[in-house]
Length: 244
Image (tube, rainbow, N blue to C red):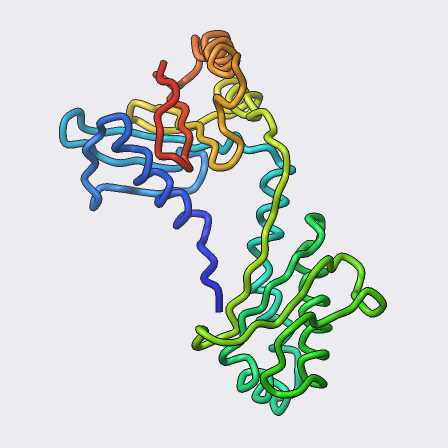
């Protein structure tokens, strides 16, 4: 079963990845994650003492949705399997022990649709010969939102191993998320507060004027806010792009 991180677990992982990029030496045991209006992270740094960080993702919503859908593919298999009679579950587990399942699905297919697709794939596998390799559907019986689905065997243990893909255009970072944090939100902390804005998929400086736009946004909205400074990161490359 695919592990799903809680919001706090994800925020801690992101903070621990980004903090060293600004030279912060954080005492791990000091990290606190309290409910709002506290910021996402409060902690102690070995050099400067108390420190508070609010996190915000700049990836476009379309990008996050597309990749979340892709990431739900394995979970969809597990959900579809769990809804079957026990005997069918056992049969599919046995038949898929060496299965590498390759699928190409519509980008818009969310968890519910993917679960239905996986149920149809499982239906087909139950009717196909044990150890079958090849396309699971043909042009006449492929379900909507399925562009490709094939079974491959060999070099796989504890299957099924499921691979899928997602592709989309670069979208500009959502800089209004920075403005919203600086202007519209309120936080309660006694520690110096900073904003960590990051993009994991849509590169924050992927456009020639990207850094200029970031600079203009922060200079326009940081003064008068509760934040002392803003750092902007490319999370995927573990890169500090901008620090006010």
